[in-house]
Amino acid sequence: MIDLRSDTVTKPTEEMREAMYNAEVGDDVYGEDVTVNSLEEYAADILGKEAALLVTSGTQGNQIAVLTHCRPAQEVILEAESHIFFYESGAVSALAGVQTRIIAGNRGAMNPAAVREAIRGVDIHYPETGLICIENTHNRAGGAVVPLANMRDIYMEASAEDVPVHIDGARLFNAASAAGVDVREYAQYANTVQVCLSKGLGAPIGSILAGSKEFIHAARKWRKRLGGGMRQAGVIAAPGLIALTKMRDRLAEDHHHARELAQGIQNIEGLKIVNHVDTNIIVADVSSLGITSAEFVDVLKGEGILAGGFGPSYVRFVTHFDVKAAQISEAVGKIGIAAAKIKGKITG
Image (cartoon, rainbow, N blue to C red; front, side):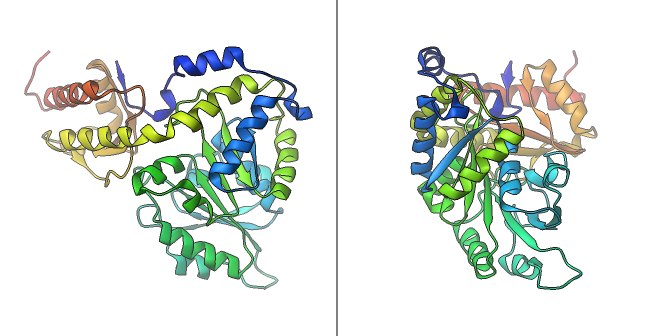
């Protein structure tokens, strides 16, 4: 089975497993886990921030950021199809008591002028703007890289109004790799940033939230309030360190595989690639086959391909460390067989 559902399905490498077994550990709530401390210090350094915090997931990192930045009844500005708005179960309202103000983006990028207009003025009728969030890469835009200049302009607009900016950078290292720039270049245009260790970087669990020392001190208490205070968490941090030190440089391989897969799918009758493939995500429209995405995903599974529905007629494929070069051409062939079966050209 070739699993192209997500880059979250990667298994930890043998080196990661050995590091977990041999990790030096202590009680992280007391700040005594040296492996966690090493991970947080290293992550802060490569992101260009003063401090960092290990959290259990990207969603937890994003929610802690909102909780730390905002007060109840404030408003958070988000891109209309951002992960925080679309996939985090309404947590910003349930946990932080804030409301969202969404802006339709272009390939995940909000227009800085629209962001400026959305920032609330002083008026008794309005909520205060507490935070602006940028997602990079943008999941629902097909792994699109939000341009550095766009992030800079939004950050400048926000800074002029004294509004903080947070990056949901679950795949920020993919963005940096695709753009050919250091990840610090992106992180500099935000007060805080969250990056996932368990997606393209291949660690089994964990994300990093980074920002100023003062912010991370407050965020640590919010992590505790959410039940995220961990004990001998070095067994989690150890593979995270390997993810950051050894897995970042190979992300370009995933992007290359994604472009090859997209080219192959585009040549299959009845399928159409609908996103510009910047990184490791491919989105195909199957509507010309006369079926739904769920039906096509089911047929693919019968051919040995796992993919994900991405709306009524879109199917998403994601390349990652566990999908090797030889499997790309194999996947194209099997996707073609699935499409042909649906069109009635092959029986069985």
